[in-house]
Image (cartoon, rainbow, N blue to C red; front, side, top):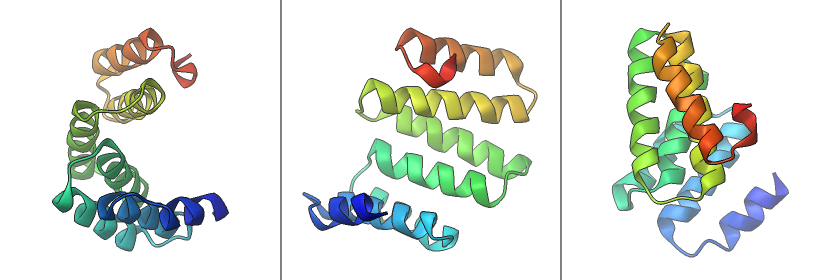
Length: 124
């Protein structure tokens, strides 16, 4: 938590600060407020981190069939944004898990293989 607060305090931009505030809210159990911060950040600038936060908070709040579809779209959008291999691997791993929950095993396997190809350890 302390590192999130330090990162927020030293953010280079408003959209980055909003993402850190969103993670702080998420980590303290305020899922709806975290979603709002992610949406506000996305409205300023599309970023991997904001889409990932929004998907993560939504998946943790409610993962029915409709929410799963939204989470999939958010993670796919995150993957279209610039980011490093570790974060992309994490998003692919999470996307694979959502596909498993939706009984879409071929799509899940594809995500896990892509995560392995970028050397993301959780995909193992």
